[in-house]
Amino acid sequence: MSIDLASPPLIHARGLTKRFGAFTAVDSIDFDVAPGEAFGFLGPNGAGKTSTMRMIGCTSPATGGTLSVLGMDPATQGPEIRGRLGVVPQADTLDEELTVRENLLIYGRYFGLSRAECGRRADELLEFAQLSERRNSRVEPLSGGMKRRLTIARSLINEPDMMLLDEPTTGLDPQARHLLWDRLYRLKQRGVTLVLTTHYMDEAEQLCDRLVVMDKAKIVAEGSPRSLIEQYSTREVTELRFPVGIQETLDVQLDGLAERIEHLPDRLLLYTDDGEAVAVAVHDRGLRPETVLVRRSSLEDVFLRLTGRSLVD
Amino acid sequence: MTADVVQPPPAIEARSGPPSDLAAAGRVFEHYAYQYRRAFRGSMFSSFLNPVLFLLAMGVGLGGYVNAQNLEALEGVTYMQFLAPGLLAGAVMQTAIFEATFPVMYGLVWRRIFHAMHATPIGPRAVAVGTLLWIAFRLALVAAIFLVVAAAFGALASPLAVLAVPAAVLTGLAFAGPMGAFMATQRTPDKFSAIFRWVITPLYLFSGTFFPVDSLPDALQPIAWLSPLWHGVELTRGFALGTIGGQPLAAGLHVVVLVGLALAGALLFIRNIRRKLAA
Image: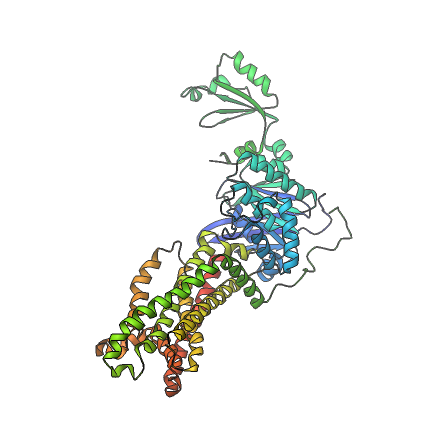
């Protein structure tokens, strides 16, 4: 329920580095994850999030730096650590030839649970994942959201101390995402430590107590979603969309309207603490954008500020 | 989980030690057994039908003509008796090639279930060994059914023929290890058909399976000796005909060649699986 800062961190990384030949996927990053925390890696594709997750999950050895997971060394105690993790990989790795329930049963066996115990936990988890009615269906015809829920249920079969979720909702429709978020939120409430990667700012805002923003193999910022927004953005954003060709000519006319202006290919973002006032001021200057949208700042804006690029290309 | 300062660090004691490699491989084996339950009937039926058709067409049909020639090369056994162990070793080889191809693709590329296994205490070596154990089990089933059918056709000349089953399984493993090791490096099974056409089929035809290698032109005979299948056929046939005791040196050589290939293949398979899973 609460974040336990008194106990040693579940993950402790200093100078953590992963290279594949000449390519550096993760470049000397530092972070700690406390028990009970929901910790996120936010960044675009290729930022090094998955490589980091695989090092934490002890399926990919670090090239440099120090890493301890659950107080153990992944280099020498990989199986022990993996025995206490729940891993939800980016792409489902379910056995589609088996039934929903069989996928849970065999997975429990990998953790050394007895068949009876596997059966008991499988039934509980099917309930939790709202898959009880599909228990004896083969996996192959299930929807993407159901497969994702099954993957999450499967990762819980060993009652893990920490879950590693690599882009848990990528590719799902909004309804399936919300259902999944609800399930993850319940786990968090129970005190399960969540470590997740995402390139969705709303997901990070929904689920993470604290996150690091990754870009080009490095951590570029760290904090709670709220503190990151406070630190790197304004309270509100006014988005203006002009007819094609007009946007580029407006620099002078927009001067002084906002604390900062971002030029995206299709729209302008005006950063300010009072979005409505800016919208009115734009109108007063005789500008007629096609659309005006006033919204609160999000992690997307933080990311834009830090890297000059959008999260989702 | 509330903030509790007296709570011991979570790290110190793992709930249970990681499984031994053999126990871990056993769980991988169990996974294959789950998969196989659904395919069991069809698989058993085709394992039964295949020898029935071949022994009927070639052993009975073709064998009628061959036996009429009173060929010295057959060394006094019927063509059926000569053929059955050759077919047995050849059929097991083919099954081994299949089983070392598609399940490996399924595990590493298509459904990535090997990656799922590796996210648990199961290590890459256990994944590879468990897979080979399962293949050995499948080969033993195929060989045992084949042997029963062969017995029904009167194709077995000695009680030692029961040992043709392990001989055929060993033959299959000599192919499964290297094939699995190769397929573990592939992103698609595209090369499978080329391997089958250009390697497996010629071996099947020219390894003393259907006719004695002596019948080949002298220049070609040494090539047959290089064939792992020839060693497998000779060993299997030695048991099926009960003639194995007459040539202990040759039999020992066959075993050494097959065990060597199976072991080397297994080690390469483990290495390649590890490279894929733990990069």
